Length: 174
Figure 1: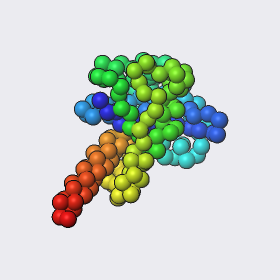
Figure 2 (figure 1 turned 120 degrees about the horizontal axis):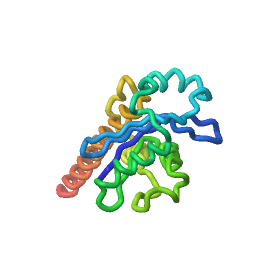
Figure 3 (figure 1 turned 60 degrees about the horizontal axis):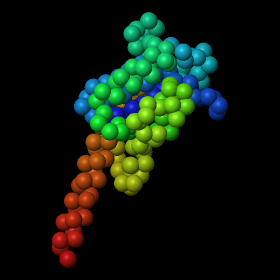
Figure 4 (figure 1 turned 90 degrees about the vertical axis):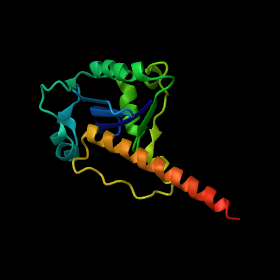
């Protein structure tokens, strides 16, 4: 099972503080949470202007502790996974650190989870950076961006398949 994810976070060069997380499974089911432990008073003005307006009002059921997010995330992933789940994100590095920190350290991730996240930006570069689908107008909402990540993956894989088919066709003409 593939999981397309995005997080919104505050980082200051030392800390990556999870604000929100959105995940869309390849079967369309979705997970969204906002960390009630996030130190929103410390965020950069860019985060205040571009991320915080997308969060639901405090008290909405999406607001939960980091420990609860970890428990619900484990429950969202584990029952559906046969073997190791595949996690995909766009510019995935900090997203993956934020997820690992929900469980403590990377070595504390659930046993059958990979210790890495696959990166859609790297896949795009491997395909010579084709034009991507348009970004949503309300980007920086973690769930909206996770949906776009799934759309981007589908687009990039179709591009990869088309290029392979074109190359096979060209080989047959010699």
